Each structure stands twice: as structure tokens, then as C-alpha cells.
Amino acid sequence: MTQPRRPMPPPLYVPKPGFGRRTPPAIFAPIMGLFGLGLGWREAAVVFGLPTAVGDMILGAVTLLFLFALVAYLAKPARRAAVLVEDMRVLPGRAGLAAASLSVMLLAASLAQIVPGFATALAICAFVLHLGLVALLVYVLRTSPPEGRVVTPVFHLSFVGFIIGGVAANALGHHDIARAILWAMLIPAGVIWGGSLRQIITRVPPAPLRPLLAIHLAPACLFTIVAHGAGLPGVAQGFAGLAIVIFAALLISLRWLTESGFSPLWGAFTFPLAAFATALLLVSDGRGVLGLGAGVVLAGATVAVPVIAYRVLKIWPGGKLAAKTNAAEA
Image 1 (cartoon, rainbow, N blue to C red):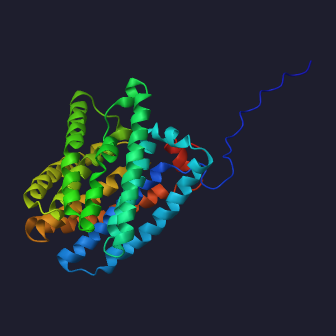
Image 2 (cartoon, rainbow, N blue to C red):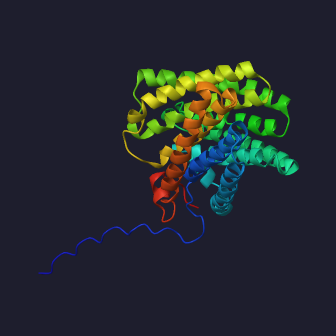
Image 3 (cartoon, rainbow, N blue to C red):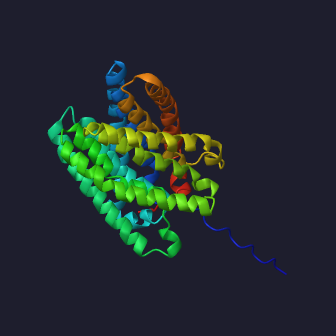
């Protein structure tokens, strides 16, 4: 009597060959943080009289990294446009796509002093691109089940992210536009802050998603930066106070925020930390306790942001980052 054949094991997943077929949007969050770090060092050069080369070198290196990452990601929708919708349906993809368009705005801000004409065109393109991604997000939310429409800190990147256009506008000398963007973004930021606070009070966020709470710091910092650049010092100081309160709450809760260990979502720590350093530099002008705090935060960001970016990006080759963030494949 012959023995019955054992069932064959399921085939291993073999990615399709081709450049960028499964590039994860999660690569853009730490890159956005590196842009913020470069702009922070550029501001530190003004405030503390440090060499300007430090900020420029960081921004130059990050620009090359960003351009490579952008080409790698655009290879996906070039093959199959539906991957944009698929990436937008998952939280890491949603955050990453928003960070990609916002990084273009940060690139425009970094180039404003060098090539203002090109930076202006780039800022307009980035603004339109971000508007298109927000429209896509609204479509995804409308077609998602109710549990997929819950307010998350990632909403700040999409619906309040236009405030980075104010950073670029100030750098290009368009302060009226910066003020208009600032006032317009206060409402969505307030709604998201309020909705998230209510959620935290009513239920504890799962440990793997807690790093995303750091995103709540970014709008307060950006409002400070834009208001200061647009000639609204009182408004800047008010939002700097709010940023300090949020940062203190995050710092006290750091062990709780990182309870689940390192993950690609730690990219959410990078830009808010760099933006907080820049906000403190601007309102303090490098003097007093706030100036000292700004220097300490910038030094901490200089260590933390590249380390987190390296740990996230090093698992991009080979597909581990795509698998961990459930990135779509073209």
C-alpha cells in the first residue's frame, strides 16, 4: 500500500522583478525629519553664529536622498496607478504619502535663498500635489468602513500640512500668503487636536501606534515658525507655549510611547523634534532659558533624527520595510 503524498508547502512569496515595485511610502517620514533638521541648523547658524555649512550640507545630502526615494516611489504608480489608493488605505502609507509632498515644500523652503524662482514654482507644485493627495484621502475615507475613518494624528500631515507652505512663503518673502495659510490651518488643527484628546481620554491607544502621537507637536511648532516669519511675534510666542506643553507631555510619556519597541512608525518622532528645536530658536533668538533649551533640543535632534532615519531606511532594501508597513505592490 502506497503512502499518501504529503501536501506541498505553500510557495514562498517572490516579489516581481523591477525597480521600485514595492517602494514603501514610510521612507518619506524620516526624510521629512532630516529636512527639518537641516532647516533647524540653518536657523542655528543665524542665532548662535555657527557655520552655515552645517545646515547646507545636511540639506544638500537630504535633497539627494529624497530625489532618489521619490523616483523609486513614482516607479509604482507609473506601472499601476491604483497603488496610490492602496497605499492610502493603510496608516503608514497615508502618513508617508503626505510626508512626501510636504518634503517637496520643505525642499522649496531650503532653496528659496539660492534659486527663488525655481523654489517658487516648486512650492506651488508641492501645494497642488498635496491638495490632490488630500482629495484622494477624502475619497478613501468615504469608501472605507467606519473604523477606517477614525481621527488619527496622521490627519495633521494631510489636513494641516499646508502650513509648511507658509514656511516656504516666508522664505520667499510672501508674508501675506504665509499669514493667510496660518489662519486657515488653525481650524483643522484644532479639530484634530480636540478629536485626538477625546480619544485618548476614552480609550488607550494600542502600543504600536503610540509613536504617531508625536505628530501632535508638529502643528504647534509650525504655527510658531510661520507666525514669527510673518511678523506676528505675539502669536508665535503663544504657539511656542503650546508646543512646550505638548513636548513636555510627550517627554514625560516617552517610555509609554515607545513601549512596543522600535518600528518604522518611529519616523513620526523625527520632524516634530526638529521643528520644535527651530521654533525655540526663533522665539528665543538664542537667549535665556529658551535659547539654552533650543540648543539642547537641537543637539538631541541631531543625534536622534539621523539614527531613527538610518534604522528605518536600512530595512528598505530587501522588502522588510514594505512588509512591515503593508505597502502596495505595482
